[in-house]
Length: 309
Picture (cartoon, rainbow, N blue to C red):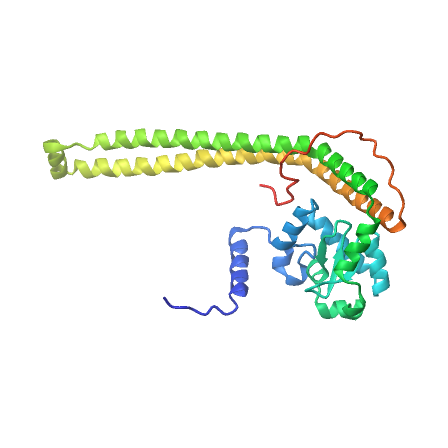
């Protein structure tokens, strides 16, 4: 084996990607057209996984951090902006500056803000003067009463119950589409085997086959079979693509119904975070939840914020 050096391969792949957009006439994203116009709210896989573990929307989380950073010009104002969302500024164990929410989850500011550590130092000052993560977590634990924990849990369950019917409808449609594609694929495989058998039977065997080879009829039949095979392949591919396009149309219609509910869910989660921050900071007692009983939480995936099909 030989190792080949690939210098600047990512830049070259970016250029290839641009050429593909130009070649096919696709609408090019602004960030690909000009790196300075890239979306500041883009997040990496690690950030998406961290947000999903907490049941949060990664784009909303990143927008929250960017808003706090934009409205502050020093450490004091940045801390106040974070506390408005229930976050606390601290010195990380491995990274210099982190934010900790009411659950004790640690967020790296350099990663979520997409800024260098040097820029954080210039605005926030030295990280050594900040309290450590263990100190902040202990402070949050002191203020997190059993009443407040119950209030948070019940509200989160209530929000998930409101959106659960739409999630079930989405899953039901996914299963239906999978079954339709599987049935069509099985139908095409059976038909392909039958048609292949019929084409093979058109080719004569024995002395008749030898005679057809001598007269040239054998090659004509074989060429005809090859054309039929290619036509059948194009037909099957077109049928599958037609089904996929039809399913995408159904999925987009459902997404148009789900999207307003998801946006409302995000807004309620955002308001709940601010409300919890107020109770934690002010030491107030949360109101009694109007929901007295809740069904046990079933094992299911939370809302999927990944790009839709």
